[in-house]
Image (cartoon, rainbow, N blue to C red):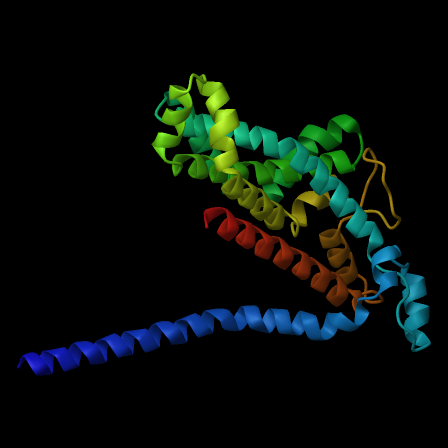
Length: 288
């Protein structure tokens, strides 16, 4: 009787293991299909000119297509705009997010901290298009024009809750003995946090920052309401500026430029993949 029950348990164990493996494989199929499709259609567009030249006009693209030649130009204006807006957003979001996360970790039971924590969760679940509309009202309308500043504000709002949560959770998992040792050596609370706890939590915080960047780098809706886009390479932050997601949307709406969608999508996909792999490597190295 016991032998029969044991065989039944082994059979159920193998069956459930097989079901889990099949479901895991099915989960990976869409990802593999997307990566494969983008890679096959976009790899031949990647060239030096694709990364260094601005987006071509519809007329140039139409003439090149009619002559059977590759479409001239690239996505340099989108790359420059993405880097500028992400850079400004990171500069603002990282210190504010870290300070807020440290406060929530240290005073999580206070009423104010609970309110901030609730608002952080609410902000994290807000649709990006709503953030774009709000930023349009707050920034674009007072400035009387679209700009890289407005785009960076929208990205900052989207990045902030991710950085806050990653900082808070990383600070909470630090051993209490770490802080106690710092206080025992005569350091005050602020100095212990700055000199002991934050360096110890650097891996988790930096990983959260990279994940926040990879989360917002592909957003299109908020930038449509704030940065608008530009066909030339522009470094001015108070003027409309382009971004890679905006270029993909513009390529989709222009039949003469639709073939460039794949190269731009592949660049964006590889950049996000690079950020995620970097975050994972840093986390593993820091935790080892």
